[in-house]
Image (cartoon, rainbow, N blue to C red):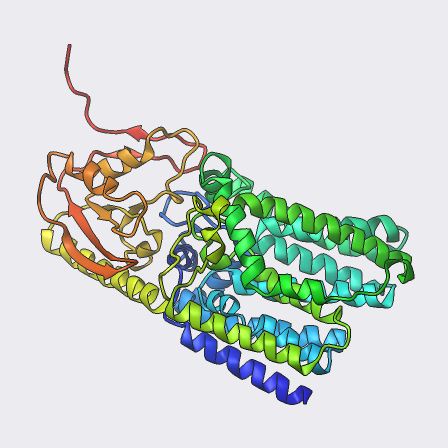
Length: 512
């Protein structure tokens, strides 16, 4: 039975990945452009000559750089590898914890059959990598808690996995940090533990030092744009958190879990569980601010930890029945239909009175529609490149994009975009970026409406000319995307580091 469960689970998961293959996040191609430039010897940068990091996941960028060095399309090849990473983590967790019978079937259903896991596995971002690493980390912790003791090699594994998780997403330290500190307090006398600590700090500090020296900052620009100085209100994130707890099925499993009595556990196990409680609290606090930010749709912040959470809860089930397996699998089948036919970010709890004001990004956009949108952007890039060639203008063309991933298909263009163009010292950057661009993207699906078009048409060299390459897409209603073209943009110097300002290079005008 267990073999059949594994085969069925893996087969359905691969089928879901194929079903959702049209979906790939725009930001995946931002990473792809970094990888292409690095592989070409231009440095790990988006715009050549500007050492600015918009990389949420350094490890993801380095992996894609390696793929680009092999002559592969870094985004597509990574999307092919990603399901393998998730399946390997799933199988390793089963083997390590010796999960059997209905508990195995429940774990498989809540993880591999989740449409959100499959969606973000092929979504092109770091989510699949973090899913793999976090599942391995959590399964190792679960094994230590069960045994009540840790071997020397366990500390080395945990230190290495935690470091790789950090390099995949900085915020993973909220999950790993308290647990590792708890282990350190309990086991500090063991030399092998300090080897794990040394590995962790060597890997993490290596990247942070490089990032500070190369980019001038240890944080990616998304930290400042979405959290430190900008971003959406906490109500959006609280609504996202509550909806995920409901839709993922984890909340249901919590009520069914029957873990061993705390008093019966070994001292190390008790210490780890105390650390895990702190980890959970810290992550939930963070999620109440971060999970509803732009590009976190489809419960992207939570998905990497869904498989690990499902593993822990499945291990805590007391004699799970085949009826429970049928209920969980049936529920996931319903969720697959919802995501595929209704939208990638379902949020039913926003109909509750206290959550009605929450903004839900792309709630009724299906994976197929998102795929059509990305195909439109690729086609737009080809049309823009050809348009520029036909103008006969010399020099480097500049474009303002709301979708930074479009720059992947415009490698010879200088791109202005909110993440790659963020500078600490630049005031009113959007107005300046639009004024400095030959092409201005008017993105119909954006919550900013016609802001870019209105600012662009205020330029005397643009005026009321119709949008170039205008395309209407059904995105929760008809939305038009097109491009303005101006022949005389105002030169603008953003500087080569995030600590730079932006300098208007237009010739001075005489006046009173």
